[in-house]
Length: 107
Picture 1 (tube, helix red, strand yellow):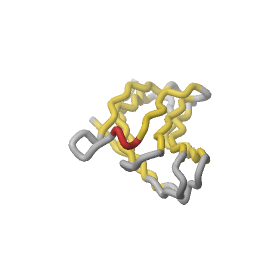
Picture 2 (spheres, one colour):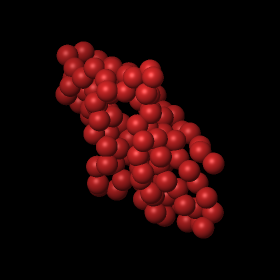
Picture 3 (cartoon, one colour):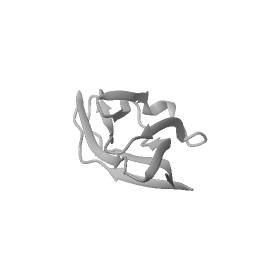
Picture 4 (spheres, helix red, strand yellow):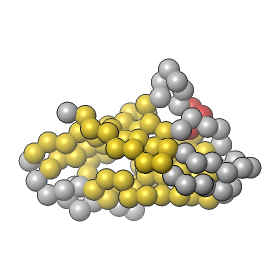
């Protein structure tokens, strides 16, 4: 079953990255991130990290209202943390939102 988790960021200024811990791997659960949805805006990039590894660095203006989901396949082992966020390279400030769709099953 697909579950969703959403987070709205505060203001992110020019040339700044902002991340949050969004989901963690759990003992007894198989969690796999399947989709990312983000604010559609030019000059910002959605970023996902598992542990120290970067899995996604994607320009948000490539997401559209007709194709708003970015498919991914990021499994989370027990104790692994998924960090999600944005990098803003625009001239102004942004307050973006991110949502991830993940599947969870018992091991």
